[in-house]
Length: 491
Image (cartoon, rainbow, N blue to C red; front, side, top):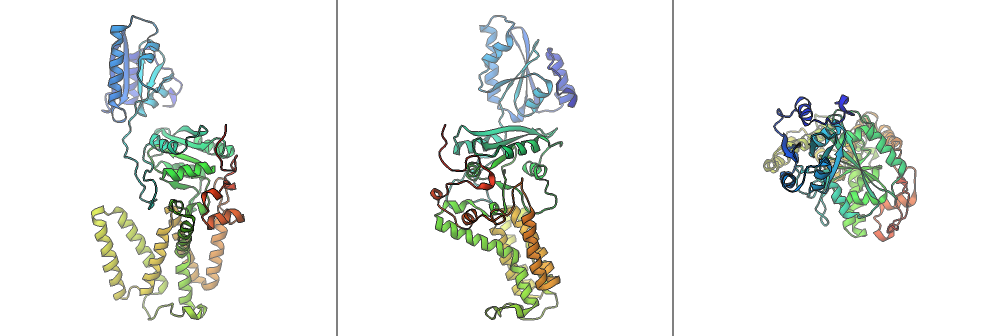
């Protein structure tokens, strides 16, 4: 449609109808409709998509406009007359064919009048969407149960409900030559870093692709260009309260239509370790939950390599841990057992995703009782292998960010491999290289291990200890907030 980007709307409604038939599929696509009326002796056509519009609005508008034939005199200002009579809060004008077609395919209605080169665009969209509900992967014991859905308008409304600040902005963009997906960049004007806002806008506007049917993930890959680095450089959330909290801290959010996940930028490694549950409990309980979560993440990374290190060289074990290690010989190398069991856990995870819900419980029982026990009985796995692999898997699932848990799993397997090959030096070098890798990552010019590297004691203390909200008066310096102090906005 490149050749029509600046083509004006023909003054003849017949030419417009021919264009819709030849280029857009009117008459071929069953969901593309047109309603033709004669108002004050002029032809007026209404173009719309059946599946994306509110039929009641269309009927109400048509009834109001038909009354013009009985109550109005002939007028050369029919465009203004119709514009004034359309009973809807959102009416704007389109001057080009491309703009008009884009709006119709987005679910709006175009009103074309004989003799006019301007079309009226009425926002009568009603997208299919589920009701806001608590996200499955961000559940809390106490707190709000509303979460983002696949509708951009609903998601921005959930944020507006929590932040009623006149400085909150949602800048709309369209991405994809064919999909023309709606994308909104959200920020608070007097808090967010203008340089970060401009950088994100420039990167999104520069996206040149047919469509972003995979929504936020495609945006992320164009925005950050992370290649084969497994570690997530942005944070996703489906919770409206989490999104609002990050806006108030100075982050920039990216909402993509058709996706319930909102992108939070910039983020560090420690952002992926936070969970809303910590802030729904008292500071002491929140701190305890946070430490347990940290312990689970550490276990998911180094538990298996350390245990295997002790199996390789029992002399490294402290006397208090002399019970660690296999109590009997096995025909299958322990390192192979660890990899097989770890991959087996991944099999179960993938199977649980694709198993119908009524059968998932039965599948879990079969996997846990039959496969695990029989594998031990026949000598395929040692009991300790199953134990430590299971603990590492639980630590993986305790990680709030799914993306980070998968990246840590990859890191664990690589660390286990170098430990098996090079023993203690391999383990120490592997851990060092892993830290250096994370330290070298930058997400939108943000150090990934901040505030650990570069080290900032006060900020690091807030990560280790969940402080009470009244005591957290300063926004994180990593976002370069224009207003560093959390306080009521003043005019």
